[in-house]
Image 1 (cartoon, rainbow, N blue to C red):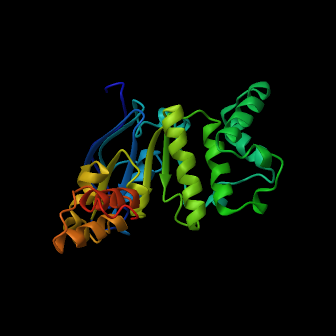
Image 2: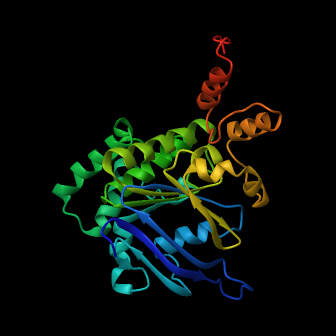
Length: 284
């Protein structure tokens, strides 16, 4: 496998026991080093199954998955895969096991047998990376949902992963918590080069990715940049998915005759485009 490819799916299918059809069917994809890739899909589309396959929680019924060069189906590689590819789940309470924040962050290191003298600086560094150092001695149950998720991320960071897999990591958070966690992960992606697989149903989150995979009925049906994916508003709606609100508004304005450019994703981009078309409206 190419050294620049962190995750490779080769014709992967997965069928749950006694299920009439595969949850994931003949999926093929690559995720390169340092990419931030969002995975979109309606409920039951197969995106969460994909997340669990990437972390060797599930093994493919058919095909092969390589994570950092390791075949997920081989027992001898399971712990190495999970060390290199950390996973954040929907509910941070399900990942927090200790009564003190810094002890929770150290939990994974203890399981890996990291020496005590090496453990402390790694815990401190991980908490600093997610801006939670001042809560090191706090009780996790006293934190907000967004803060708990950042503690969960710190626990993974302490293990120095190459890949971060987030399975609906912001689904249970309020808007400020969602933004807090997403910004934390985006910063880690940019500054530390950690490859991110961000599984979400929030279109505005997916719009911030480098690339998007769209999953429907167990198949990867579209792949491209956010602008490429969201430009086809009708296709997304046919897949029972939405598009970012500003993309939708721009499409409606184009339908009414306003010659807006394609690929608008954000409020700022829409305002800039309206200013371009209406230069006299400088107050917009």
